[in-house]
Amino acid sequence: MQTIAWYTSLALMLLLTIVFLRVVGTSGRAAAETDAAPADAYRYRGKLLWLIIAAGVVISFVTLLPWPHELEASPNVDKVINVTARQWSWELSDNVARVGDRVEFRVQSRDVNHGFALYDPSMKIVAQIQSMPGYTNTLQHSFKEPGEYQILCMEYCGLAHHGMTAKFTVLPSAQQQ
Ligand code: CUA
Image (cartoon, rainbow, N blue to C red; front, side):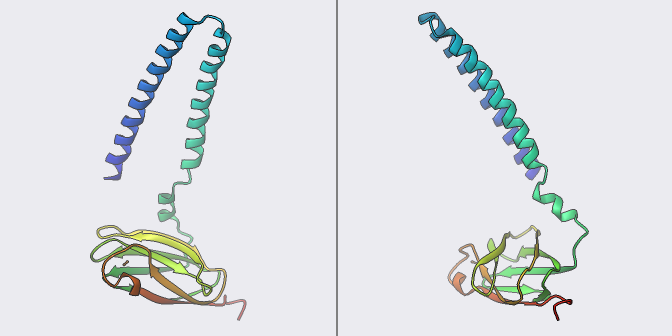
């Protein structure tokens, strides 16, 4: 599914680029015919366009390299916790972790879309990921502070959406104890 979406987007982007370049080409010619004076300006504008396109390609390539999906293959995980969402509760294979541990949450749903969100003791959100039926989404997180964390649902999922909470305990690291 993601592959199809990717190729469709790519084809549409290519189509848009071709249309855009044709419009730029014809408008430049039409303007040059009616007004010969700012020809230099049009020449620079063409170069600027190519510069912007080249910069766009380079920036897209560099920023898409650390695509989150590659994290799934990461072996540097200290603890894996399976999370199953359903209307309206969270089921966790474990609800304790230590500060500094790299925890991987494997999140899925039994029914509709939910949003898995971790809040620290001061109710500031520290990490979140979608919880979807038919998919397992992985979220990696290292807790920095010990305490009682909360899991809340971030996506409206029906009548008792607001009550879809769970507790998660973060203990001090082994060295801190
Ligand atoms: Cu589950 Cu909102």
